[in-house]
Image (cartoon, rainbow, N blue to C red; front, side, top):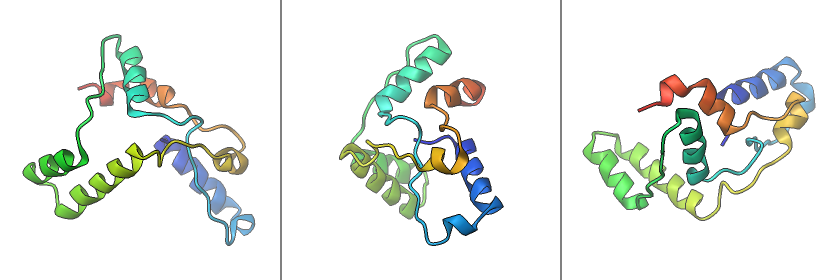
Length: 121
């Protein structure tokens, strides 16, 4: 996971000086691989109360999204993402962000603290 502010900072760095990035492909990540259980633990720390991750099957998530009115393509893409994430797709980090921006990406816990008021149910 990567903080949306870091995505903006990365894009700004590339746009400020595009020539060294021509033809390059980057995979930007946060500073640590993070499971959804880890994210729930960070949120619990921020809120000072329990937050648990309750996994649902990708098919159940897709069905619930469709029942709530989400477009079919969004429900299907979300299902594919959940399948890939469960298979370890997000279990890595790269140095790309720090090499381009010149600082490490923000950890999820910082994002959670900075946006606690927006994330709280």
